[in-house]
Image 1 (cartoon, rainbow, N blue to C red):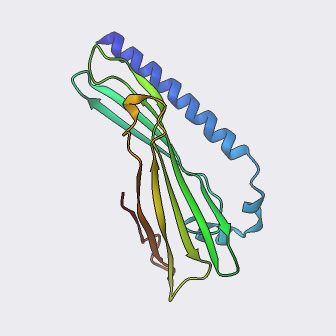
Image 2 (cartoon, rainbow, N blue to C red):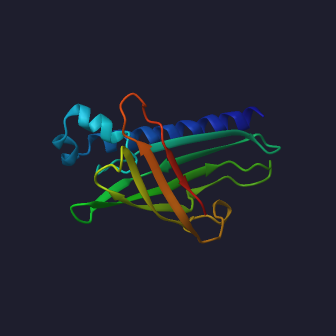
Length: 182
């Protein structure tokens, strides 16, 4: 048990080290488009999931006590959001979720696995101007079977609709709805 605890702590520290390195590298990279906005404009647009703004959110998920071996699973979701201006009225916004997974075996005799998981990509067609006080976007979503390890893959290609609806009114914070179905 003590050996497993040391092994888990070592893997967690390795993963955290990689995450910190990745966050530092991303934060130091120049993003000239971000400097074109005032702070208030940038803050408002960062709350808009279909804004004409390139962003790179990173989401960390930790799961513990999995299976009889009390295994741990860590997932880093890299989620670049990239808008493309189609014309004076519409943007096409791509939102891709690229998961990196480290999973300890839930069985005491199993092997740990790590690698990329399946990629989920959404495309939103969105008017540049709000419609009656609402920011809207809709389009398709695709799940690509792209995992690097067999145990990290669902082995299925999926497609479905996705949509985003958010009020622009002041005082409502970041309430809204973003949904996709596969």
